[in-house]
Amino acid sequence: MSDIIQLLPDHVANQIAAGEVVQRPASVVKELLENSIDARSSHIQLIVKDAGKTLIQVIDDGLGMSETDARMSFERHATSKIKSADDLFQVQSKGFRGEALASIAAIAHIELKTRTPDEELGTCINIEGSSVKSQEVIVSPKGTSLSVKNLFFNIPARRNFLKSNKVELRHVIDEFHRVALAHPEVSFSFHHNENELFSLPKSNQRQRVVHIFGAKTNEKLVPVKENTEVLKIDGYVGKPEFSRKTRSEQFFFVNRRFIKSPYLNHAVVSAFEGLLKDGYHPSYFLNLTVDPKTIDINIHPTKTEIKFEDEHTLYALLRSAVKHSLGQFNIAPILDFEKDSSLETPYHFKNRKALNPKIEVDRDFNPFVKSNTGSSNFVKGSFSQLDTGKTAWDALYHHLEVDLDNEKGTDKNFIQSFESKLENPGLFKDAHAQIEGISHQVDTKYIVKPMTSRILIVDQNRAHQRVLYEKFLKQLTIKTSVSQQLLFPLELHFSKPEMDIVNELQEDLESAGFLFQELQNEGLIISGVPSIISEQEVRSVFEQLISDVEHQVPEQNFSVLDLMAKSMASSIAIKKGQTLDPVEQIHLVDALFACKEPDFSPAGLKTFIIIESNDLEKKFK
Ligand code: ADP
Ligand code: MG
Image (cartoon, rainbow, N blue to C red; front, top):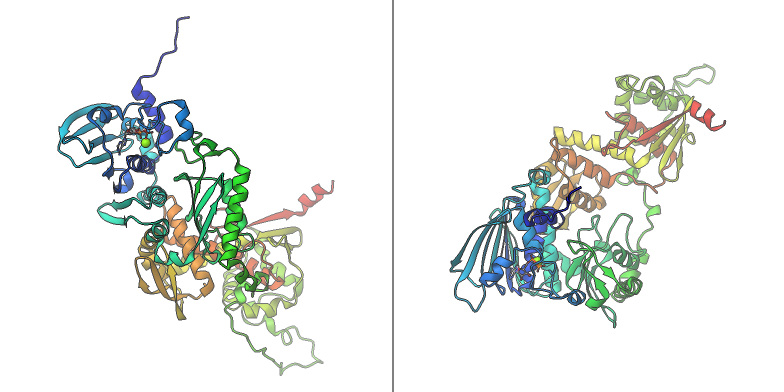
């Protein structure tokens, strides 16, 4: 057989390499910004159009390139940053693989303009899909301007794979944050579709964090400092009370390179032990400096993962440094006074006023006359069709026994009665006082209810999400939600991009029942909230909503209202671990089966399962 192996042409090899290096516009932004940093620039401008799909341009005032270098820079493995394999172990620059520009040039239209400080004229090169279209001498300012247009123009599959502009822009902003936070000594500006998103002057790290994440961030930062032979730590952690539902404020920089490290993250989180509420993440901005010889940056094409020689020591040092800072700034003791969440009033009793017990006398009661209406006053009104005791409960889920598909089994009055119960749970309590004990909570997660020939098991969190979701969606769609004025307006702080999201949603939030006194660049003042949300929950509702909008992949049928309803429902729904008394259990299960689609949570997960007595029989075999 003849030989069949051949070397791939360069442009093909470059396209393959691009698959690793360039996943989306944000990857290009990262590579270009890093090149500008490596070129010792002091001011860097980022200009983006349509989230980078149409244009990404980075203009710097750095070292620039000579005519030959300008041409060379697009060759694969062409780099000025290392010369030998030994250099790999003392990399000080961001780049060293020499493949970013070659990869980007393989999948986009590129215009490079560059001039070194000692030359009078600069060079302009145009490249499309790895082939040089033109090269000329031009008059240009010192430094480099690199424009990347029509990303993935020659790989339609990749282009179609890109997410909405909103999502892609979010990624671009994330990359921008990472570089800007690691280099506060450099000034940056960032424009998207002619709007200025950021203008960051030269500053120190603390100010940089504040410029990016908002003025209020300043008061939440606690400095962390440690200086040992193997590791220098320098940076900030957020006070525990400012911890967030998202991980969007967690940054490690190793030798000024942003990295992801679940292991080191664990070290920091464990230093916060006992100080964080469930589901909350601490903010941190930590610079670690280590001897470049002790790390390997070259294990991942985008260089965001690093191998450390001695991870365990770093872990211990980091954990103790953070712990020390939290202790020193007197953060730990404050929490001793924090209330125990298990002592908190159950969720739906929180906002209710104490009711005086009503004493009702049945004036018609005659002990000598046998009657089944007179004495049981709880079956009046909306409960009229329920019987007492065990049979009452079974009646509630009658439809499960009869026919799950049949318009909720029983009749409309039945459902209406549930709705009224939801609005008036007090009534409910009386009704069910007599049937307590016939449902159980397992693992503070499931509500288990035996019925005549089957067992119903409900996931409390998913069920509550479903209930709240339908309620919110209805209120949002028909704009009927009731607001409750706050006695003292509530101030919340967010970064500018986060506020952009809030601004976009303003109208919908208002129809959900939020009243805004003021929406500013870096925060908002809320004067009223939907009556279904308590004041304490407002912050987490906003955080969850922002993070959901940021990360939502807009599908065709994407609707903001739907997302809002989902997001608000998931942030305030009762969670696993929350103890529910029998009345609350039945209340929740009732509400679930009064829903339009009780079978699934808003995220499409099962809300309940049924175990038939046949299944039980099988278990006993
Ligand atoms: P790497 O950064 O790994 O060296 P790149 O493909 O990103 O590889 O860049 C190739 C070379 O082009 C760099 O080594 C550098 O010499 C030069 N270069 C790229 N961008 C700039 C810039 N903004 N200013 C000056 N030189 C640059
Ligand atoms: Mg580079």
